[in-house]
Amino acid sequence: MLYPPEITEPCRQDLTQAGIVELRTPQDVDLVLKDQKGTALVVVNSVCGCAAGMARPGVKLALQHDKRPDKLTSVFAGVDSAATEQARKYIIGYAPSSPSIALFKDGNPVFVMERWQIEGRSPQEIAFQLVEAFDEFC
Image (cartoon, rainbow, N blue to C red):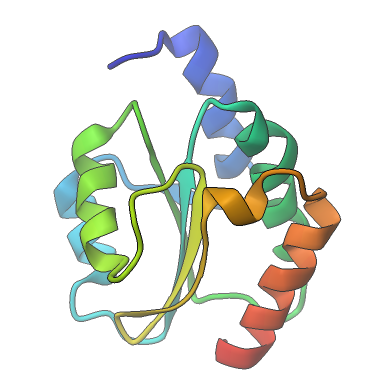
């Protein structure tokens, strides 16, 4: 682990308190995404400022919407490295990025927001784009 718990724990709790389930091992990731039916959100969490100020708040705002993915999950880049690496294997066609947000439908990524699409945007802008994806795919 690259970061001490006193730094990472608040980052984890920011999402778990919103009902997002952490995937801490590659097996956890496979249980959610392998042969997956329905929709699943995977947030690639990070300790960086754009995760704290933009990505996590944007996800939490989007989860207030009526239409939501069936499963709400996260992996933690730089902390749970094996789980993060496994999740990235499912995010086909995209370079590793943290933070990032991926929506899966029936096991396929149908919407991905990479770090460059998160940086410099407000939580409201991120939530708006996520809600559009939820409306289309969930």
